[in-house]
Each structure stands twice: as structure tokens, then as C-alpha cells.
Length: 258
Image 1: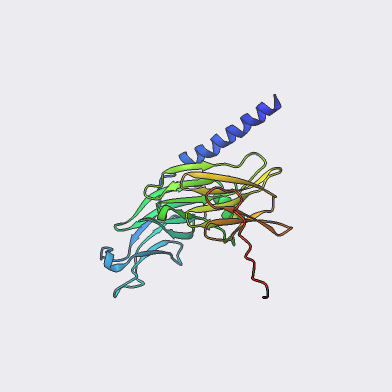
Image 2: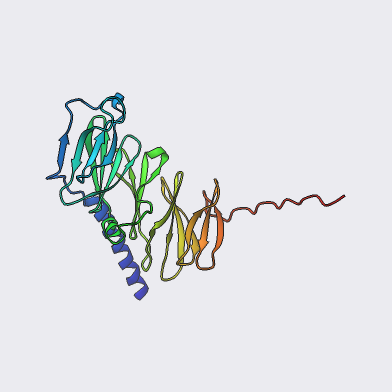
């Protein structure tokens, strides 16, 4: 009976966080868009996005006589931009309140808003966190956002959700130690028991490997990834695609003296 009740609680929690991610999409009322130039943004301008000193996301010219000049800016009162990540045709702005905004340069516009559960807490509790905020996949057509309580996957063009993966009860993800490898994001999931390191691609979670609570992923090669075990500092090397142990490299024997 207790086992069934615990399972029901986990299912309800998963439904709740998933619903929050899908339904919490506040309309951008009160947002401020300012055009700083009478010229339209063209391909010749080479427009790119940056964070302005006034707390705005700015589109600026990167070529020509207007190089460096702000052409367009966007602000969300009460929130500050933390990062801007260029992807396929869209730049994703990450805001301090846990909101993502997709902005485009041609024409300059806000394309979409999405709220990520747990992202505001991560940014508030770990302001100096240099871990992965937005992981680009499939040449920027898809991206992932990891937080302690969920890993969200989105389509870049319209911000629609592809998948949301929650840790089991008693577990949480460790996004500060996440490792972005081409079209794969690898991160640890420490738990009260049965911790894992997990990998995500454009289809969601693709493998799990059991680990210790302090394990973290490390780069090892073009086709492998390492799982560093702390505090023993041993490294298990697995295949990127499957998470299965990587074949041992053949030992080359040097010829002896003749």
C-alpha cells in the first residue's frame, strides 16, 4: 500500500511540474521594445544580440558604418537578462525570473516566451554558476535547459516543448556540472540512493549509468564520455551513443632488443 502511494505521489509531482512548464507562459504585458534606428535591420548589418548595460537585450550592427550601434532593444520590467545564446535563426535570452525569450533579427522581433520550472531558483541560489544554461542540439534547431528539478527540451523555431524529464523522488539534477558534447548533454543525477549520470539528445534521455552521488561527467574523446567518481577520482569511460562501457584500447607492445 505504501509503495503504491509513493508511486502515486511521484506521478502527481511529475504531472505538476510538466503542466507548469507547458501552461506558465505569461503574456509579455508591460514589456518594452525600442527601435533605436530608422534603418531596417538587413543582412548587410550582420545583426547580433547582446546584453545591454540598462538590462535590455539589444540587437546591434556587426558590420558597416553602424557597427556596434544598437538597432533594437527589448526589456522585461522586474527581470534582468542573464545570457543570450544564438541558435538556428533565433537567439534565446535567459532571464533572472526563469523565463526564456526567443528573439530574431530579421525582422527584429520577440518570437516567443517560455517559463522553465526551477531556473529562477538556480540563478538566484548560484549567481556565479558557469554551468550549461542552454545546450544547443541538432545545429541549433533544438535546445535543452537543465535545472535541478527538470530537464526541458524545446524546438528553437517556436519554443514548443519536445520533452520534459524529471528526476525520481529523492533525486535532483546537477546542472552546474553538466557537460555539453556536440549533440549530447550529459549531467549527473545525485540521489539518496541509486545515483546516475544521464545523457540527453534531441529525443530526450537516451541512457543512464549508475554512479556515486558525487560523480560528474568529463570529456574523454570524440566518441566517449567519462564519469569521474569523487572522491576516489577514478573515471569510467562509456560510449557517447549508448552509455555502455567503451572498449579497452589495445596495448601496443614495443619490440624488444635484438
